[in-house]
Image 1 (tube, each protein chain N blue to C red):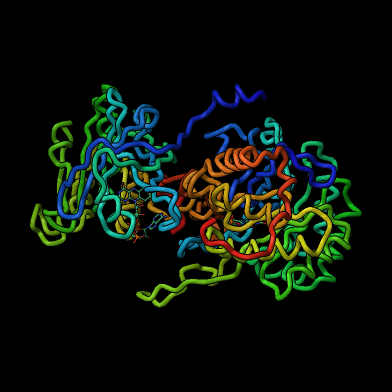
Image 2: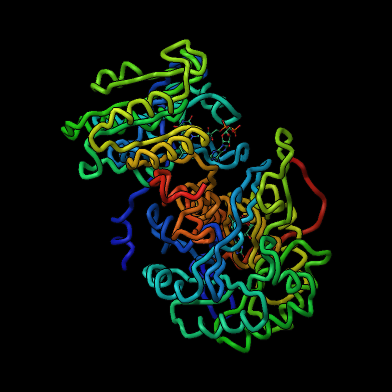
Length: 307
Length: 278
Ligand SMILES: Cc1cc2nc3c(=O)[nH]c(=O)nc-3n(C[C@H](O)[C@H](O)[C@H](O)COP(=O)(O)OP(=O)(O)OC[C@H]3O[C@@H](n4cnc5c(N)ncnc54)[C@H](O)[C@@H]3O)c2cc1C
Ligand SMILES: Cc1cc2nc3c(=O)[nH]c(=O)nc-3n(C[C@H](O)[C@H](O)[C@H](O)COP(=O)(O)O)c2cc1C
Ligand code: FES
């Protein structure tokens, strides 16, 4: 079941998405995290961030909006308090890094480069929930390329820019990431949305808008993963509404090398484990032994509604 | 750490488990008995569970409910709720033998230790009553002899539940209703204030109910200088501390900007009233 993201080997292609798995401590109360292919930890910045005022979450049809605002204790606290805990488990740890300026991303990369317990960095240039800062990195391919290459220069770790779906053509950003020296790209982050309470005539979220995630975004995510996998030759990590093993297999067929399980963990904390079992059984049933054998193997052709 | 050592530390549990019994207590208020031995055994008063019917996407997120009562012998615990919205209406229609997906036990319990106070004063508004039976029962079970009092405010006499259960435990109960159909026509703060003015010995207040009621009780507690714990009912997603969606403002100093956002599901749901910034 192993797959490779650059030089990093994941024991299986199923990882958990940033911001939906904290720093591992909570779900470690429920199951052995060593079963996971990898863990993408909550967005981490140089300095602690307080986050947005509540109301921060709101459930929508087959999804949810969140405007957490990247609340975190900063990279020093991550290294001192969170990383040793995560390193008890036999799984790969990826740090989702967040900054306002290129130098901040590079500084985070330098600091984390010294940490043997960190397998790679996921560059979060796509969080929709903070006011200033990295919107430009997500909306201008040149800026994306610049931030990726700055991080690339600062670290020998695997570098994975996480792309925003809130753009006209996501493939331009995948290409810019590859040009900047990325080892892989991950996508998608949340889609910007909002909701209104008709009784009070107010927005449901204090921040007005939030990021939409969950099963409702899956078709968009799947399409974007397919397009990006067609565009770049580095691995694509698929994210967006993956809740079952069939969802995961769809992403692999669309071209993903690995996947991240996000919001589904809130609905079912064991979702990632069930997906691992399901993907493994699917491969077995089809006489295959590696997920890479189905990566990108979707075909066009006549659609048989019975099959 | 080897996987085995990690496994021994499991303190939360999740799986699909059967409802063993369903009770219609009053009006739209129901109680489900649920078979889950680890939760019946391990849940402490004030803790909650996250409940989902299935892996359906409608609704997508699980809903939090207090552990209302435990029966350790039979490995059963109860949830008590009002069928108000989509989810609660759906589970109200479920009967013995059907399954729910449960995650728990979750959250910080009521501190009921004997060094906290000489008298336990429970203050319930509406369905806030749900979390208190387990608390009163646990005190009796532990042979704690401190007096327990319950001030219970409800809409009307049709929405009052479990009175006999509290009385059977020797809890002194005072009920008030919005329309006077049972007890005095008053808000729960009226009998509570009256009682506190009799200057009882070192009471501590444990409060669960609608936000305006909890705020009013916190203010009374501050004036009367008594310890006060609130059980918050914040909108939640994960319920276990990973999403930080259930943010509550926790005081870190006296300045307007001296606060951090805590998680209602981990630092709460039970929180010292003086720590909370409204
Ligand atoms: C720690 C905790 C313990 C609780 N214990 C009980 C209990 O013992 N008995 C009981 O009747 N209720 C309890 N509640 C409230 C209960 O979770 C809501 O009544 C329930 O979610 C309603 O869902 P619904 O779909 O039926 O209603 P909806 O129509 O969705 O909403 C009705 C009300 O429930 C609230 N609500 C909706 N979704 C959530 C969510 N994901 N998290 C929190 N609140 C939500 C809404 O703000 C609204 O006020 C508790 C809440 C918390 C946080
Ligand atoms: C509550 C919440 C917090 C999130 N926080 C982060 C974050 O800190 N960094 C990040 O890159 N993505 C964050 N995300 C986005 C997810 O990692 C993921 O890209 C997105 O939710 C889509 O996947 P899903 O539909 O499987 O949840 C967050 C999502 C949610 C729901
Ligand atoms: S509900 Fe997710 S952190 Fe509290």
